[in-house]
Image 1 (cartoon, one colour):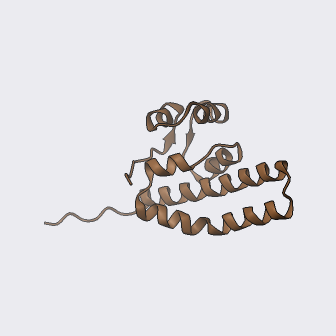
Image 2 (cartoon, rainbow, N blue to C red):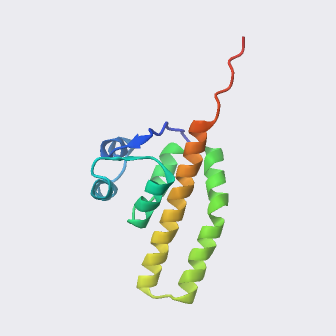
Length: 125
């Protein structure tokens, strides 16, 4: 998987250049008309607003980051399954999906921002 440098400030134009569908770009524009900082708080807002993260992950995360993401999201997936099993209504399912998207978006932001904070390897002399 390719690793794309994620800017600290994200705009709808950047998402479009990455290949986001028009629906996701419209949702982003409604939520963040002037763009936003790429952080866990804004990622949670985006997920709660119904933005999906899977396409973004495929564009920006390395294989090792994706593996960390999947491992970290197992508890979120289990909680979603439990919520739906406890209340299988369509409304409950949609609410649970938004919660899960929000939790997953926060995890992606955490992993990508950790990448930005890692010290660069020293060049060999």
